[in-house]
Length: 301
Image 1 (cartoon, one colour):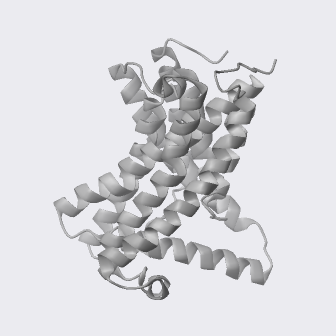
Image 2 (image 1 turned 120 degrees about the vertical axis):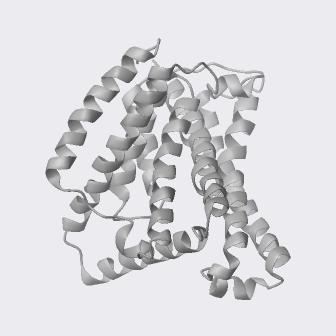
């Protein structure tokens, strides 16, 4: 049965969902315009030079600030605005709270380690799908641009740079994206449809699509489904935030290791795993998730 709980503004959860998407679009516009001002203030260059130099490692700090500002405008502010309209306590509406047990934390970490291996292997499936030459070139160009951005933002020459990268590339994205996709989008989708799987799948399709990566589509889809289930079972936004951070932190650590050993990030960041190892991870994922389910008080209803 569709949940149509009204609030003092007379907005249903379904209407709030559309409002959330609209505010995300507005946040993208504000974030983009603000990014231009940040670029001008930090580099002294105009917008005409921004596209030419944004992939230059010399401007890594400016790129980090711009990306952080854009993410906050798009993903962090809109859910709080809508949640405040829906309820006087937005943190409660977003389900941002609750206690962690040691077992829950350890299970969440193990779930994400196994998920990372399984999801990474799904890119093999995407690469096996035949494409026209033009589409293949287009998608590879998109991947190259994404890797260029990673190259710029992951300039790490020591432990201080590693710590900064863990904050900018692991912690902040985990927080702002989970607030939007789990606390906002999935939460409102579930309140509107009362169907947990519909909310998880649609949210995950949206999550993967908005990253604009063809070859990484299935990988991010699988990752988002796991994050969505962790949120659904725990009803605690901190759980998918922790899981997302673990996923990002592993990637940052891998980049740091490759850079410190003089290896190419582009050539090694997405190394595939042998299939026997993947099957082992599937088994470990199952038992880790069962352990996680037992560690939380609430289940899927």
